[in-house]
Length: 514
Ligand code: ADP
Ligand code: MG
Ligand code: MG
Image (cartoon, rainbow, N blue to C red; front, top):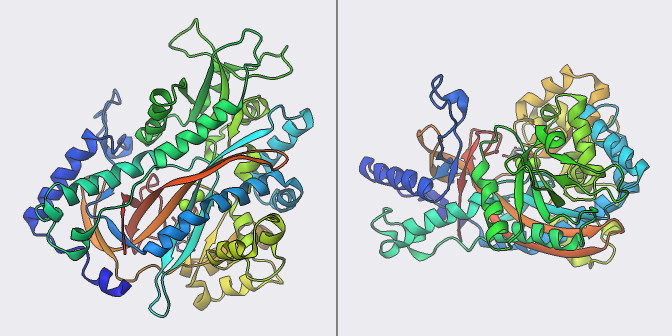
């Protein structure tokens, strides 16, 4: 079934048909906010001196087929995944042991851990944590068995594109439905005539999570009883701003919550914690409104996930400043650390202790085994383990990817490059990497992508599904709110190893379920 669907999809385009679809997509994208800021490095010198330009986000011209059973299973498991990562974050003994084993080989992880320990020593004043998570998967399509859902990774910080994913669904849906069966817009194909992509409520789900945290914060703690707000901490020069603004708009217009965006390098200029107030409220001073001040209920980080964002000790002080404040953090430093690839490897290693059952004590065994089914084998590189042999042997290395403790794409080592890469590192550093079996998506899937520079590429592709979830819990592990909703499909050329959209590797896409 799977092979036949992929074999004839998408239908071939005449030059005129392709021109029509590209023109439609370009115009639709800007009209509807399916956009990113351009990469200054790709513009002629001085071309956008005032930073007014926006451009179409990288996008596929067709939705991609995706196995319905895998899509539904990913949604069905999301709240359990939320619970798992909230539980891990609350279990400092379990998480701390894993993290402390990385601190001598990974300075970034060590600095995050130190930040947590420093705030812990002083005493946290906020018991609640908010997670806006995205669990990423591929459908393993091997002719010998039914398509299987396999997790690529679980993101606990700055999980992006929830604000744009429904835009792509909407673009493809309009192409499919604005003429009978899409027959005027798309060349004919049974898949394009029978259905549209499923609803996508990522914006609503993620905004609800932020709104629930805002509500749970309770009364102002500042002596002046300031109005309350949510603060998005973002990177200066962020190009994916319309994604963030979709959540911003939902919060301000539907939830009626004041929201501000602040560059991470302006934390000390625009926020403070009154030293005389033991509750440590985080106070935000909007630079465009000098007489006003707000107390921040919830800090949503779309920054601080990558070591190159911490250019000086001052940046670490700013992160510590946020962490020690009374604002609910999305995420806390500990929750960020729970998303380390090392944690995912320990959960997914084929042998050893049954961590899932001991972490998820109140969950029945059948549900735990469904979660476990989504793991692809992962290994450490210790001298005693299987991972080292698999990574160093050129034949078995071909079936694997090597991952460091990093986020945001562009950090992994793939297949044939693994053995030499490892040999170039001192053996003492190997423990900061994990080895993961490559997931095998549909071998003959194709699509056509419109890239940010306007180039149109047709070819073999690999699609990665993300499912969004949100959870609010306290440091005893008690869950106050847990929900899932909304999805993301990113599609990349098959020859490309990496998958990030922001990192320039893949295109936003939507699904046709089969
Ligand atoms: P990051 O946190 O940097 O996004 P990922 O684990 O998602 O790290 O890896 C980046 C990309 O590498 C993924 O989007 C995917 O394209 C590819 N990748 C990672 N793990 C696998 C795997 N097990 N099988 C196939 N591709 C993978
Ligand atoms: Mg990630
Ligand atoms: Mg990823």
